[in-house]
Image (cartoon, rainbow, N blue to C red; front, side, top):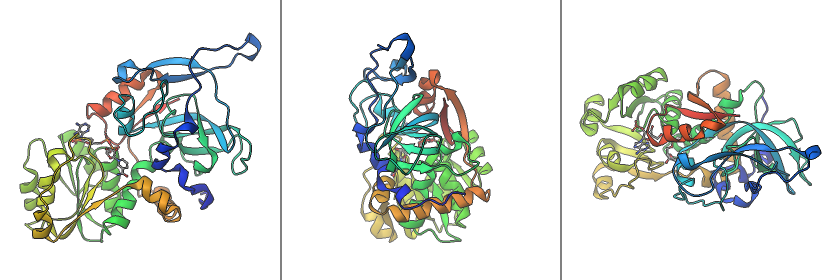
Length: 365
Ligand SMILES: NC(=O)c1ccc[n+]([C@@H]2O[C@H](COP(=O)([O-])OP(=O)(O)OC[C@H]3O[C@@H](n4cnc5c(N)ncnc54)[C@H](OP(=O)(O)O)[C@@H]3O)[C@@H](O)[C@H]2O)c1
């Protein structure tokens, strides 16, 4: 397995590179103006106006050229993430100039390198975070932002691994300091962040309670190691936590969902518990009565993986190296529930919006 150097993990690759917008803007999809001899184009899913997934179009557009310090990656697979559903609606903090392609987590092969790039070469297999532009046959990325793909890793897995597991290892180890023998509750446990947290919780020696909205989703969680489950559509979350922990409460909560689930989970915490705030897929950002933290002697802990990786790239590199080691040992089994071609990008995005995804969805290009 390739050992990742600090250079390879320079800060720009992380989610915070979602702010490095100018580096991955698509060439304008004006249609090809090339002569027959030069004719080459690439296919991309294009957002021309903010709207629902159905408003995306698939077009042939001009191929990309790398700028200084950049590479062009021939995309083999692109992980579909919750922010992709927001960015096309103009509801994400990153607002690329129209037209653009969504898709920020890709795995593929370097096809061209720009001036000043000596860390990678055409033919190298890489993972790249590009903020957007990944729902396409090619994407432009900063060379310093690339993660080399370990030998033997499949492109679909590579495009669906780092953001979720990278966030969760940081959340559980660095932020919550999860201890062997503690009890971990994971909300939205069958989703991307959720299922990775279930697996990592088990690797770190916790008893894992998975909470999700359907029995099918909970069955997947059990297959990935969950010890107990709560169906929060049909069961009282707080009461079930009490029941499953014999009144002790849970030591750590992973919350990528927010909305009406957060407060009952916090009320089900043990003394000295750590509640990890990761995301708000339910839409509402909960307003928690602070007296609960006093009464329970517990902490509410924010998690922002992108910012962490930008501030402490070497620590993030260590985390990712550990993850890849566990993957190689078979301790982690990333779950991809659906693979779609580019033409069905709207279906992939609707799966996320309609809560149909378990683990991850990937576009195969
Ligand atoms: N803080 C960080 O550093 C960081 C890093 C990566 C991702 N995130 C954030 O973490 C969140 C989860 O990401 P993910 O990749 O796990 O997403 P995901 O795969 O779509 O899973 C989210 C889960 O949320 C639940 N959910 C509840 N209400 C929902 C609704 N109205 N719409 C959609 N899902 C709903 C669903 O589970 P049930 O149906 O079982 O309720 C779903 O499985 C996102 O907000 C993402 O931006 C944060």
